[in-house]
Image 1: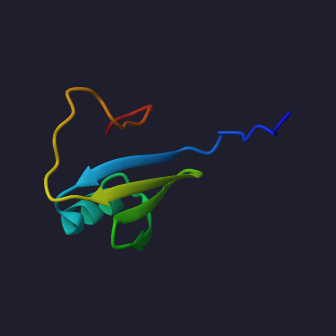
Image 2: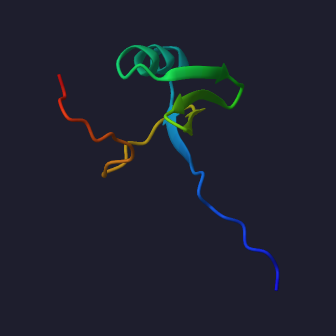
Image 3: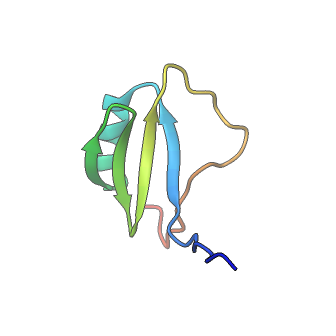
Length: 75
């Protein structure tokens, strides 16, 4: 029987049409740790996970929540 790969380290993906503004937002507002600005994506650490914000020409808004945090106090 082939060994099963554990899928316990997901990578989170978002998209942006403005990488400079997105980097500023995610570094400053939620205080994410910036890792790299690669040609296809900005890379951040979110806890022990990776967030890749893909650089695209046009972002199509999803009609549902795509990413969020549980917080004890929003302020």
